[in-house]
Amino acid sequence: EIVMTQSPATLSVSPGERATLSCRASQSVSSYLVWYQQKPGQAPRLLIYGASSRATGVPPRFSGSGSGTEFTLTISSLQSEDFALYYCQQYDYWPLTFGGGTKVEIK
Amino acid sequence: EVQLVESGGDLVQPGGSLRLSCAASGFTFSIFLMHWVRQAPGKGLEWVSRINAEETTITYADSVKGRFTISRDNAKNTLYLQMNSLRAEDTAVYYCARGAGGFSYADYWGQGTQVTVSS
Image 1 (tube, each protein chain N blue to C red):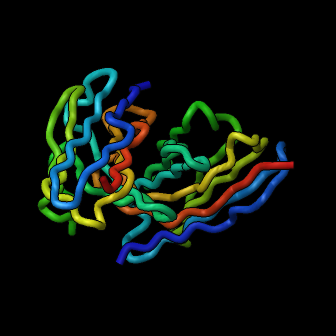
Image 2 (image 1 turned 45 degrees about the horizontal axis):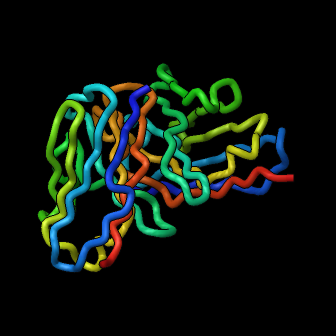
């Protein structure tokens, strides 16, 4: 199965600053990559699909890039509601596999 | 508005069985791929199973293969997960999720139902 590795595990950022989260696949998944945001006690929320397309209602401060094995989620100016867990997931191969997550916390 | 509401989670002993349900509304359930995904306490997300709209394609994670069965009733707009031979490591919040049209990633998720396997 495809192993997804996210880094860093925890990212400490001040409000208004930029956050850059990384996701690496153990083999190419083309652009079949999504990013989810999860807050405590809530279900995951789709942010990005196709590596770079924002889901409906997602603010433009969220952007995704990359293809093949290297992917990035950038939050251009962190708002208070953005402090959460973020997961990447590939959907090129079965089984679908998730990264271990990056926690974005307030610095 | 798309809504997915899971139910059926409970405390069950190792070796026991449980059936989860997911009631869907706000979209044409019968044409969408559906998933079950779980999250163990304090852990990340693990995809469990999927079923296509026609029930002709079903896939399981190796960790549940032979023990769990996914099914759906398109007339009742409901997704199911029959879980047998439950183990402590199956303890998790179980989410149902809708597959995005034409693709296999999940675009909408329910709020989850807690399954605890313990004696």
